[in-house]
Length: 284
View 1 (cartoon, rainbow, N blue to C red):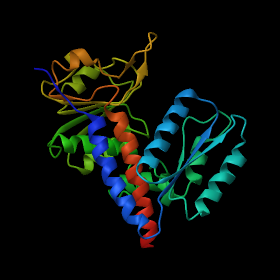
View 2 (cartoon, rainbow, N blue to C red; view 1 turned 180 degrees about the vertical axis):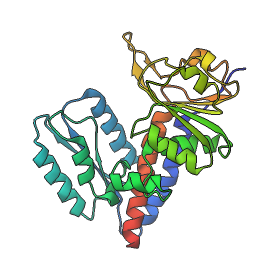
View 3 (tube, helix red, strand yellow; view 1 turned 30 degrees about the vertical axis):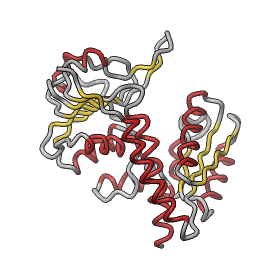
């Protein structure tokens, strides 16, 4: 068996085209959806991510603004900027690129963003709404994964879903979305005993640990859908995921590549969240 490759790039283009059409519709009403991204410091990877997000917004017809701040920016200064953006009716989405410098309280920064403009879906109010099955914003990576499963016509209801990685950004919200869709969910972490015994039960396996090759082909149920969220750069410069792709593709039914899998969908769903925020602002 050789797994089908789930093409996140192609699927993301379909999602982006839908956003572009919705943006055009809002523009006819005089509303230009706007996303502001705050980047603090000189983290090279963050700069690439921010450029990609800004380019995606502009291609969809949205207004994109990047506020670049020095690594020595104070917490108070950053919070003041966010408060001003909260009050700006032309800004529908606010995103603070993580990680932040160590002297800034990341939790406090996220909680300062208006829940109605929190297009990352990280605010505690949005986390609570997701937990109770009434999401306002779904975090972008889990949201994108659900779209990928939908594109594969995956039977989620009643499926065994195993998530490796319990972060607030991916693992925990992913579990909530899968539970809401009717899956039986197992959430694993770095301390899980006999990880392979858990992953081999999975009809749907999602791996998001930041540890290259933590899941190998012998840890996968034949025919499973494998979603690799990891993106790791090896010493030779090669980008790889958290799943050993070559061994996994011999067992899985479908698998996402790295790069070109989950990454493009994360940005696409950021655009979806932003257009949803803009549409809500016109309805209020």
